[in-house]
Image: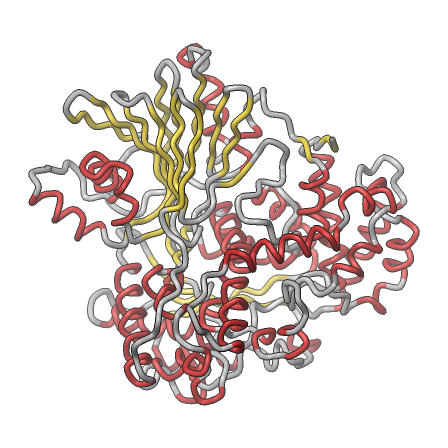
Length: 613
C-alpha cells in the first residue's frame, strides 16, 4: 500500500513549487516508508510514497508511459487482485510489460480502456492518472471504500491526498470547521457521512465513484453501487457459492512478495480467513504466522455481556493448535493505551474511536516488526448481519442508525450555543433519512425483507466505512498493509441479495456463513457466538482518562471548553464509574471511550489549529 497526493491549478505554473509538492508527499511517509517520488508539469503535480509489496525492485511511482500522442502518469494506492488476468488480456492485445507489479497493469488498463477501466478492476484502490493529450486528471476509488481519497476544490485550486494531512500541508488550505463539520464530529462521530471530509472545503470521493478534473471543472460519477436483484439459489447452493467466493478472494489476496500473516481473534471471521490461508500456505510456503491482541489484567476484569459473551484467548489457542500456525500474542497496558490516543488522532487527522483506534495502532506497530501484509476479518458482520442490532427489536424499530441510539444524551454534553447551532438530533435524523432514500429495493418485497435490506444497507454504507477507515489509518500509520477479503465486491453483491431467512440459516447470526464453513473450521469455533474486537476492561483505564479529561476541563485555554456544557461533563467525569456504560457509539465506545474521545477532540483542535467558522 502507499500514499498518494496531488495538486492542480490552471492559473499557476506548478513547476515553480517543487518544495510544496514534496511537503505534501512527505506527510504520508508512514504509509509508504520504502520510497518516495514526485512528478511535476505546468498545471499538474503528483506525489507518491511507496510500501513495496509486489515486485519491490520495480514499480516506482509516479509511473509514466507514452501511448500514441499522449503521456499518462499514474499515482496509485492499493492492490489489484485480478492483475494477472488483466495483464494476460492486455498482452493478448499487444502490450508489453517491464515489471511484475500491478501498478503497471493499472496504468496500461487505463491506456487501453480509459475511464471505463474501473469496471474491470477487482481490488482495493485509490488512484489518479494524468493524461497529457486530454489535459485531464482522472481519479477513482474502490467499490467499498477500503482505500481513502480526500480532495479539495476551491478558487480554481484542486488538491487531493490519501489522508487529510496531505491537503492540510498546502499553505493555501486552512484547517477550518463549520456547523456541518461539527455535527459530523459531535452528532455522528466517529462515523462520517459518505463523501464528507469534516474540514471545511474538504470532501472524500465516495466509494464506487470516480471523478475528472479538467479545464471545464470537476465532474463526479458513480460507477458501482449495491444492486438489488432476485436471489435464485436455494440454501445449499447459496452456502456453496459463499464458500467458493470466499476461497477465491482469500487465494487472490494472499499474493505477495513480502511476509504475510493473519489477525486471529478466535472468532468466526478471523478463524475462517486463517484456516483458508493456512490451507494455502501448507501447499506452498510452510506455516502461517498469526497475531492476536489483549490487555494487561483483562483476564481478571472481563465480564461477559450480550455484546461480548466470552473472552478470546482460549479460542485463539484452539485455532492455533488446530492449524499449526506460528502465533504471537501482544498485550498492552493502560499507559500505552492512553499514550496511543494522540498517535491514533494524528493517523486519522480527526478524533476517532479513541482507544479502539489506539490499541489497533499499537497492534499494527508490533506486527510490522514481523510482517508487511496482514489479512483481517473486517466487514463480515455488516455483510452477513452479525451484529446484535440486526437481531434486537429495539434497534430494528429505532428509526435511526442503531449505533447512534444515544444522540439525545450526546446533545446534553454540548454547550447550549453549539447544540442550537448544529442541532445534533435533527442532523442525525436527516442523515438517516438520506441513507434510507438510497436503498434499492425489489418490486413486491415483503415488509420484513425490505426492512432487513435497509438495515444491511445502513451497515455496509454507513457503519462499515468507520471500521475500514480505522483499519486503513491505524495500519498504514505503522507501515503495515491490511487486506480485507470480506470486502471483495463479488462476495458483497451476492450476500447483499441473499434473503434474510437464508442469511440467518439455522436461526443463527451469520448462519449462511457458518454453513459455508462446515468442514473448514472446528465445530465449536464454527458455532461460537460473535465476539467483537477486544478492548480493555481494566478499571485503571477509566481512571486514567478520567484524570486526563478533568485536567482539560480545568484548563481555561482549552479550545474544547466553548463546545461543551463544561459543568455537566465535569460532573460526569467526577463520577466516571457511574457512567461507564454511557452509549457514545455502538458497542465498543461507552463511558471510558467518551472521555478519551473528548481528549482527542481537544488535542485535535490544539495541534491542528482548527478554526471554528
